Image 1: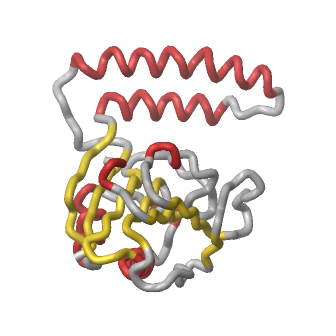
Image 2: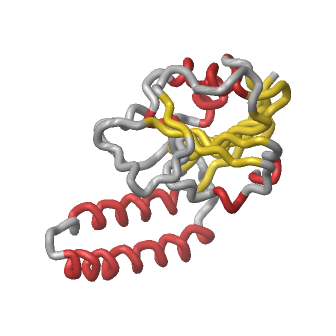
Image 3: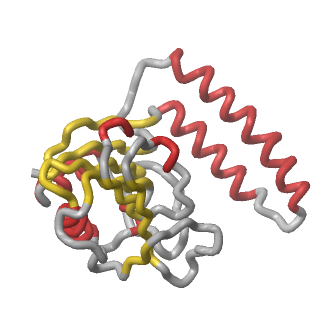
Length: 201
């Protein structure tokens, strides 16, 4: 969905801007929060955000990109309204947000969203959903959860041993999940991520 974003783009919750190369835009600006417990030394933040007001004028951007951020926001309705404010009319926002994933960046992990929930939040705050996808499926999620489990339990001080143990368990699990997934009937009721493209009304 990246080609749908153009012009002046705001990467909301940019971190290290890992997806910047996906977008062909006039200008790419990264914004993030500066908070205790969140490492910014390797990030590429252009502007810091206080959690309430995005420090740009109304209708400053043609596009907004927001990946794996909404689960870390407690006042999500207010943030969506702010995103709408800084978008131009008919501007687009591309969002990815997890439905099934482990807790992370504790204690700033506040929610998970169903397909219905994220669509409702956007529509009630002035957006129309243009395109929606789910990533992953029931089989892949179950194998990935086992992989996450082994990744977690082998988080030990001996880094080399930790790496070896993780690879011994995780690689076979991921390969098995990828091979088995096409053999089972499709079931997308359990999945990893919501991927949403929406347009400002």
